[in-house]
Amino acid sequence: MNWSPIQDVVDWGSVPDWFGAVGSIASVLFVYLGLRREIRARRSDDLRIRASQARLVSAVVEIRGTSVLRVTVANESDAPVLDVAVLARVVAPDDPDGTSVELAAAKHVRRIPGRDKQDIFVTVTAEHRLRPTDTVLVDLTFTDHDGNRWHRIGAGQPEPVD
Image (tube, rainbow, N blue to C red; front, side, top):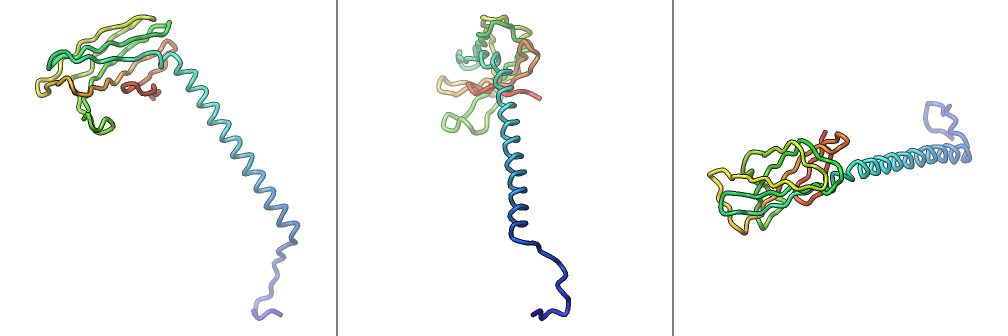
């Protein structure tokens, strides 16, 4: 018995039809999620392979007096790195992830051969005075042998530069 003045003319199908429709949608969703996961895994593998040389390039900072930093950039790979830019920043010792202050303009090195080190001396601007307890991070930007541009902050993992 229908109390509505409009007749119910829509055929909603049977229970097996509903189960079939839900199953079809679930299978499409399952395939989509699997494909998306596979694409992400391949991108991650590709980035890991591309970063193999970049992980072998690092920088170590030594404070010399109150206004000079000695930054040693080491290229432990077999191939040279090019267009190296070194930017020294000081961070608060109690908050290394907080804001940082640039100590000087970026220094540039054209080429560091494979299995070699380059010492770069950075003179800190006059408004900053270094203390032996300061935490200094180095922003390192460089191009690897394959032409990929990388950015690395301190001992963190290298990230591709777009």
